[in-house]
Image (tube, rainbow, N blue to C red):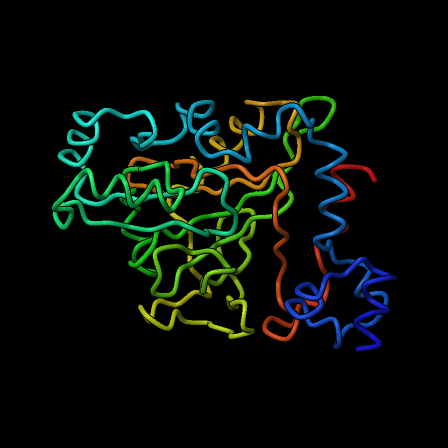
Length: 296
């Protein structure tokens, strides 16, 4: 407990940071290499203009602004007519309901449209739960589904747009669900890091500290997994990062579909992702990468 408090003061380490990255096993020099959530928050507040943050914190506003990058149909249950909702159900076998301002996957729920007997009751129930957005359930690339077919397994790509207009990739993350509707780390999912070619070389871990070299549901090897269409992902994220230049530091959630990449959301106050030392043997974090790109 004393060491945890010291790490909070000396390295701005939140409790979850201390736990996830095994700070109790690291030397002071090793601890100084980790980007922590409080440090990331400093960057978000400094680099992202206040007047443009709502575009990213509200999923309805985000969907409107980034429509060309979504790769899916969506409607707002607050404004859609009965005919528009009926047509949406006709076109899509499975849909996702979302709270517009939720974080960490909270309030996301999947539905099979064939099971919806009363459209009016469905709308009323979703609005009562603040699930105002209804989106087409993305069909992910078969290779991504091979990891886990209960959720869309996404990438978190953290980028920084510098003063000269160059986009720097700070972190590449492969997120996977584990039986639930979403792949969020805070909701039962797991993650590992990717190299610059989109390949995972290390085990994934979840919020309870579980470590997985093989996915527990699919038995697909996580170590050695290569993200399909990676060349398209890099160009896609580069374009995303330039779309709202006033928001310079973003964590993008990207799905891989058979047709290419699709953006799920952009997080202007992104979570932090790094390898777990006891699971991988890697005892250095990404703070040097962030510092080299941003210059703090």
